[in-house]
Image (cartoon, rainbow, N blue to C red; front, side):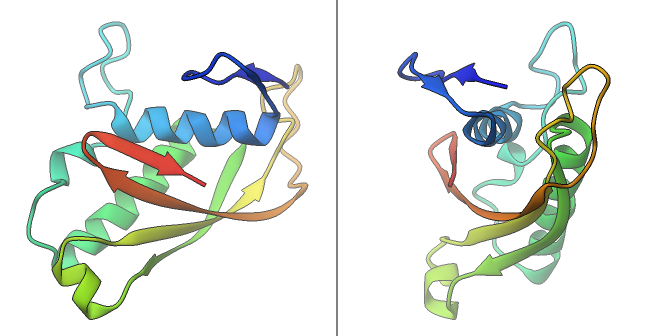
Length: 132
């Protein structure tokens, strides 16, 4: 499955399309989509809060739930938080997400066979998310 990059208009492959989808999911406020109010992850609403172990647990739970609900090509296996104490105190943390890659999830009929395991990171910045 090929798609278009939403910033440049260039053709992108299936995996990059899935990463772009994750970016859209995580930058959409709950209730922002008029015809699909439940779409999104609820992460943007948490940015700017004091980083605590509870907040990290909530972030991980929202990440996993949103990917499982809205991006069928990924099956979340593990989420880890990278960063040393000093960078986390400065409000910077990087989430590494390990997923089962299911490239045929949107085929007709759907094929949920895991073709491999992939890991990508999420960087959060001013109302944006970058998945790589």
